[in-house]
Image (cartoon, rainbow, N blue to C red; front, side, top):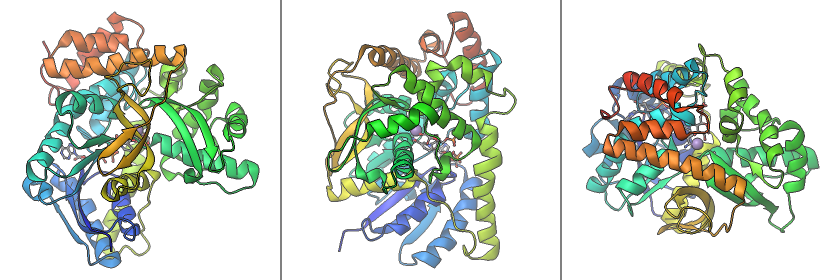
Length: 447
Ligand code: NAD
Ligand code: G6P
Ligand code: MN
């Protein structure tokens, strides 16, 4: 019988919470659980999802203790893992992150460009606060953070809480690997899953490339994938529900133009914001961005389902959906708890893994994960094109964290100016001044 874990989900009111709870229930054989506690600082929002999850828990796993709270002592005491997915400022602030840069003809995106930097300035403090609650009330526990922008948050945890049990993760690569498996299955007639593939990948979060994808017998799967990506990008009938919306499908298709720039590798979709910003701006509606889509889509759907479950007193007929996101987190927790040494893509200090890149950069690379945490694998030297792009971007991320620590206006201005998505220091300054105004309840005061 495997030892049970107690889990705190920070950001209990997240649209992804029900899927994660459901995924945990479905994996009781490999990752048994004694307790799940939801924690949020927004009682009203969390209550709505928690009441529905409580009904689901009673129906599917009455033996697991389930509770929810806004009190950090209750939430963080006696736990083994914190899964953190908070969104500081909610979708209302995401909407401004996206719309303010667009006013100036600049990419408006949740994690990339000035919008991502604004979100970073909001996320750093509260994520560090969660790390500190964990340290205080359950110092042996692990924080698995996927609160965005993960690249900036990861750099902040490296700078401010080095050596602590904190791992930053992203589901985009596993989402794309699921899609690649679907492409291979469709095009070869043989069935593939993500776990049939051994991959090599390097980059920053939302900024990376696959260099090798092989099956378990060592057969190279890259040629078959490249053939598809060259023509269709990642567009395929994907099992990944999270990225099914039309705007995501457009992003998946655009990957073919990213691929065209370097046909030795296969790219992460997020590179489109850096390599084709003009295209992105032209195809954005400054009055209706992704935040609006999510508020009218995923948020309405998940909260509507929760309401129906509470009203009916049962989750029958209202099953929540589980994303790749959720399975990745269970894999990671399992690897730490049971020392599985599973190979996973995580955001970790470079420390020489990419030999010709800043050792202090937080990079996204394959690691073997065991009970001591991640052991990064050596990815060797990277080509000049990628090194150039990554060097610029990692400095943007570092400057944002420095701006937050030092309350420095100029560092934030430098960060926005340096971003490949921004044309000049004068545009950067206009965007920054608008962002400061919009974020006055969240950012430190810059001077
Ligand atoms: P959401 O707004 O539905 O949920 C976020 C929740 O966090 C809200 O209930 C909010 O009240 C809560 N919150 C905000 N500040 C908090 C604080 N200081 N302490 C405790 N709780 C706090 O957002 P969502 O769309 O479900 O996304 C949640 C997060 O997960 C976002 O950061 C999103 O970017 C991230 N995410 C990351 C990945 C990844 O690949 N890393 C994938 C999916 C989602
Ligand atoms: C991908 C990214 C995440 C991002 C998520 C949701 O999975 O890796 O970092 O938060 O997409 O994006 P959405 O626009 O649907 O909220
Ligand atoms: Mn991500």
